Image 1 (cartoon, rainbow, N blue to C red):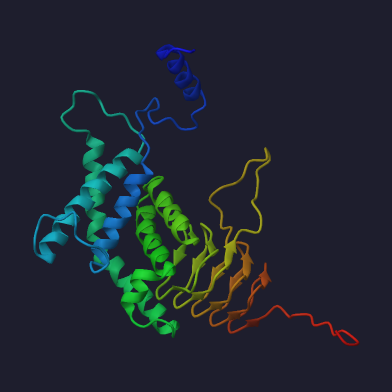
Image 2: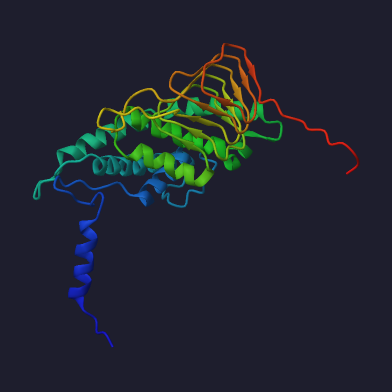
Amino acid sequence: MNTFDIDSLSRVIANLSQHDPHPLHDGNGFSAVTRSATVRLIEHLECLLFPMQHAWSDAVEGSRRNARLELLGVVTWNLAHQIHRANPHSCEVGMTACPRLSEAFEMALTFVQDLPLILQGLTLDLDAAFNGDPAARDRYEIISSYPGLYAVMVYRLAHRLWEYEVPLLPRLMTEIAHSETGIDIHPGARIGTSFFIDHGTGVVIGETTEVGNQVTLYQGVTLGALNFPRDEDGHIIRGQKRHPTIGDRVVIYSGATILGGTTIIGEGSVIGGNVWLTESVPAYSRVIAQPKIQLKSGTP
């Protein structure tokens, strides 16, 4: 019978460490953000934006206003911690405080001061969902149960951090929303006001997508890249516009695929279900996938 051998276990860890794609601590002292902490951060941010959504089980304060203020302090510190961990640097041992932590805290403070503006935008998204879906009984039903609004909420929070050039954390936030809802919105996409995703499962919105105001998407819509340009060595060229531009007041029905960085869907257009588009269409177009009907002769 094998006996417990700590040296054997140490060798296993050493072998695993050789293959770590991104060690928790590299030569610069970089510590990756964690998924569990990011899930908690999203939950707290949702609670701040829509306070009727969650019980205030973590709050010590009795009144709603003071409990919300308490939670805002928790969010600010936790966000600062995540930003601090996301930015590669080296914390010197023995210092009273890492200067990069102070920078992260200032960025977190700036972000939370943006929350009222983000909520204004989400209120327009909420109104678009309520006005666009006759099955919705009230706005609380949408807040509590519509995956599209949840995915858009997380996107709008993550997009603001993306604008601040925070690494990793915005992408992790939208991937958590993706796993929860089946809606994949890259935090780098630019999406206008009054945005509504109905049903939502399978929606994909790529990094360089631009979406105008009052746009509606249904399930299974892909706003993706047609191809990935490469340099002479075969490496993908990053930072180029790869995804389509969608004008104001466009409706895109289920299963439609729109690809390419030069593809522009003109304002007021309607794109039918299962359409495949790789070229631009002018404003107020109606694009449909024409079904083929075969008539059988004789009786069934």
